Length: 426
Image (cartoon, rainbow, N blue to C red; front, side, top):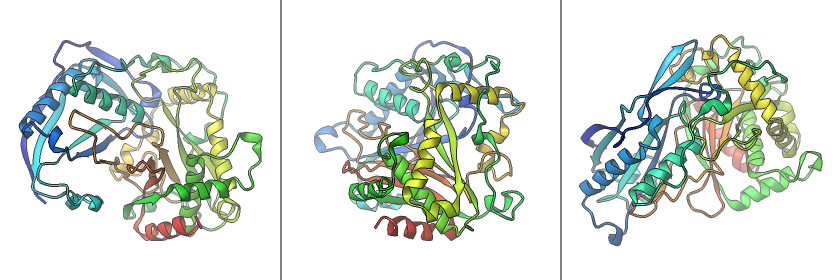
C-alpha cells in the first residue's frame, strides 16, 4: 500500500473570529480526551464527477476555512493548566489539512472488501477531532455544517460555545447528593491487586453485524420476564449492551462471583434542567456504570442484565449530573478519570478492560449521508476502538435496520466473544 502526500498546510478561519481563553467544563475533561477519527469514502457518479481532483481539494479547503469562522474554537489550541485540567485558547491558529493520493484499492485498507470496485478516481475524507472540544453529537454538527457550506448552502444551526451552562470555570456548589460509582475504582479480576497485567495484554478489534431480525429476537428475549415498573420494553441499546456484557463474561471465563461493570455513555443535553441550548458545542456526556457479577449475568435471563443497564440510565437526572460535576470540581487532579494515560501504556487513568466493558451508542447520531456536493458517501468508517473493553454500537450503513458492534478485546478472548455473541441470539 503506497500513499503519497501531495500537500500539507494549516488552514485558518477566512475571517476574524473571537479570541481568548475558553473555560472547559468538567465533562470536557474526563473520560475520552484523545482525538477521535472518522473516515468517509466517496465514489461519485459521472454526473457528479465533473471537476478535476484538484478542484475538489480546493473546494474542501475553501469551505473548511469558511466553516471555521462560526466554529472558531476548533481552530484554537488546548493547554494543560495543571492538575489534569485543560483550557482552550481560541487563537485562530488553524487546522492541519493534508492532501494525499494512493494507488491502492479500498479493499487494501481493511474491512472494506465489499467495495472492491472502489479505485481509479474515488476519494475519501478523514477527520480527527479532539474529544476535549467535542463529543459525538457536536463533532457531527460541525462535519454536517462543513458539508452544507461546501454545497453552497448557509449555516443550518449556529453552535453554542458557552460552557457556563455546565458551570465551566465556576466553583462547586456543594450539593453532591449521590454516590458516583462511575468515579470509584472499577472491579478487578479476582485475585489481582491492580489491572497492570490486563492493561498490557495484546488486543484486537472486531466488527459484528446484527440483522434487524436478530435485534428483534434479542429484544423479545430481554422482555420475556420484564416487569413494567421501570418503563416499557427494553430498547435496542439496553438489549444489545446487556447481550454484549453477558457474552464478554462468558468469553473471558469469569468465575461466577467475579464483579464486573458496564460503562454507559449518557447525553445530558435534554436531561439538564433547563435543557442545554440547541447547538451546544462541547461535551455533554457522562459515563455511568452498571455493576453486577458475571454469575448473575450469565445464569439469569437477558432481561436481568438489561434491567441493570436501564436502572443506571434512569438514575441520570439533572441533579445527578450537577452532583457529578461537583465531584470533579472537588478533585485535586483529574488525571485518573482520563483515558489518555491508558493509550500511553501507563497504569494511570480509566481502564474498562477485563473484567469490565464500556459500550458507547451512536445509534441516534446522524452518521451517514454526508454530502459535500458530489453525492453521499458509499461507506463511513468508525472511529477506532483502542483498548480492551472499548466498544461502539452504530446503525449499519445498509439502512436495513441492522446494527454493527465494533469492539476491542484481548486476543485470547475475541473469537470466543464472537461465538457466544451469535450463538446466544438463537
